[in-house]
Length: 404
Image 1 (cartoon, helix red, strand yellow):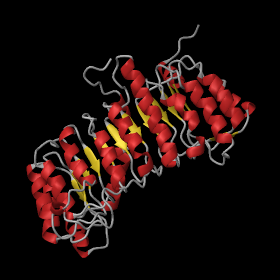
Image 2 (cartoon, rainbow, N blue to C red; image 1 turned 90 degrees about the vertical axis):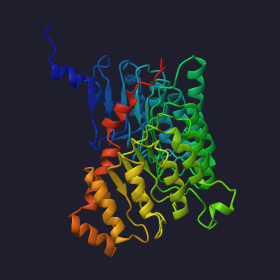
Image 3 (cartoon, rainbow, N blue to C red; image 1 turned 60 degrees about the vertical axis):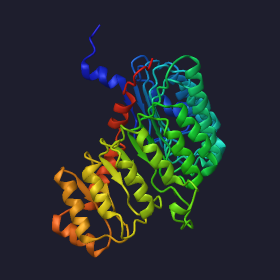
Image 4 (tube, rainbow, N blue to C red; image 1 turned 180 degrees about the vertical axis):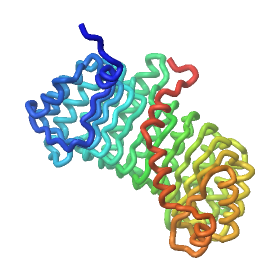
């Protein structure tokens, strides 16, 4: 028998049809692509960027059951042009096959239009306690679908704890899903139960003050958290103009300030577009002053309501409390002072980093002209780095003390 070369073995472990725009309706359509696969060797399967019908999904499910070594299942964007009748049947065929896989570590089902009506078939898969990375970005879950997902994750954690084990789940990506306040309590409970989370992405979910407070409360239990993205959710009510000193009401910035001491491993915090006002910034800067965020390298505060005060204090915090900070986002904020912007930029650049500024403002233009800084390009690069698969795989492999 001819020995299998290293390249052949590697190709057998990783099977990819990614981005080929195939339309696979029936069992017969998908069979030529499945036939060459060695199910015993396959560790990664990438089918993203094709469209799969019910018949093809059922045949795929049959093949998946034999992939006992499978670690990564990339099934993002596989239901384009599929109807609300097709998606649940296809999803069930696939998820049922993945539900009991003991080596499965990463599942990506992003960019599939489940909606709340098609989310139930996910439940058995979400109960799989081997999963370390879960990506459900842009699925149109809505509050009800979000509750179904969160409750399934909570049940998974309960089963894990009942078995005397720690949760293996490290990464949860669930942005752009309209989760809103209606699902926030369920997510908070799920996050608290999966206390080993290291990365959580919840951007653009229409979450408001009460939901923000609840979710931060749950995440506060995740003491190993390193990457958190809450962009474009509202930490306090838009019409709330009260001075914090005159109010006992707790909003999202109170909750975040209280949670920060628990996150000593935090590296990346994105709270852009979250209605951060000068008084709210003071709460966070006070929390930073305790020195718990010594490892924070990225802080994104774009498009908030910082006003004309606070930039000097922020500059001091960079020096005194955030020694590792190398990326600071301040785009589209009010009242930027040229001297303070230059001072901040010099501090960040002195560490080999960048101050991110992108807007039509004379202060910003002067700063960018003086330092020759290309804000948009750098910002896009940072966004790409933040979500790269290598990072998620590294976090997935992170061993937490006491994990079995």
